Image (cartoon, rainbow, N blue to C red):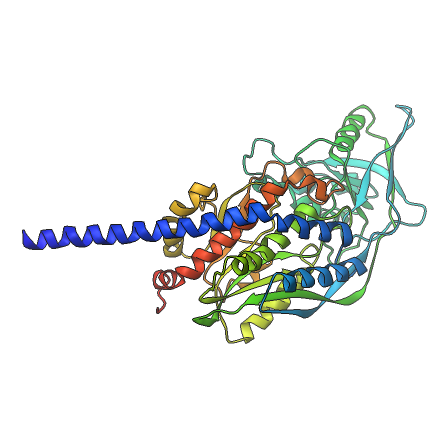
Length: 470
């Protein structure tokens, strides 16, 4: 009986201690959220990035401007150190605005439709490319056709994002393959060009670009994205006149690689300076617009961690490092450069968080780590963060840039905002500063800073769950 009473007392003290710790964490996190929302500094930095650097595709002068401007913000916000890490990046230029037409004598149509070149595509001949069209709804359907029916044609990939998929990034993943590999696959059968339905969740007149790939052993053919509205129109016209022609003209080209930079800033850890928590977003953006959601929001989310820690006097035990990656969109060269350096640095990366899913209301974080670490984070962090609306750790996965740290970092994560409107803007002319709500943006910044605060405070507990030493 005596031993049982001792056990109950110990259990009570442990529970009380845990409750006290959660209450203390909640108080600190409440300060992080209230400061972010009150100061609105992330929104000011995003305005600078969007309006003064704008169409900052890697290799461009505006990408260099973004490096300079965001470095200044990080210095202004009190980072202990700020430095630039060199990397070579692809230099693709779009050239003149693309043109396209649906041409049908049977339907008496000679109608212009909105298209844009896919990133890294070659251009058409100077007078454009005109050919018959064969429509498919994915690469699997293409492979089932007779190659004779494809030869000399423009392949029209009209696979739509599945609207019934609740988490739209899953719908994007289901569809984006036709954009990336569509030209390679079509060229195998003798196609002369590719038109890809924009990977977008909304029917509108805006074409969405994005990266595509070539294989040096396969003939390279030009590829453009067509707006979802025009894709519907082209598909309907093909039913009425399968012999119609499609003409498009683009002048894009690939130039030699150029030198660029990642921007790196940090607060040095007070107790474990050689243990690092990385937070990052990507500086480059497609040249269709300002890259406000993709990934201006992620850039300022990451930068705000530095500012909020400094303003609130939070002195982390571990080094908090912000990395603004260059060239995520068409090569991930910045991520590769940082990962290569990190593996030689002798430091211990304990977590890497990315924000690259837009500036919408944050819901939680994805997790790419061991089952034990998932349990630790979900049981320890979710109860605290749920009050602030960001306690969802149910999804697996991590970001494209921080993913290169997987073999040296036990926890990879990605901020997970509400995804329903992201692909209305993604890679299109709609991705502008005015489309980002300042309150939602600041909530995302506070969410990232709060997660980093908890990772820093409870890092040793995570290591124990991962089989490491305290």
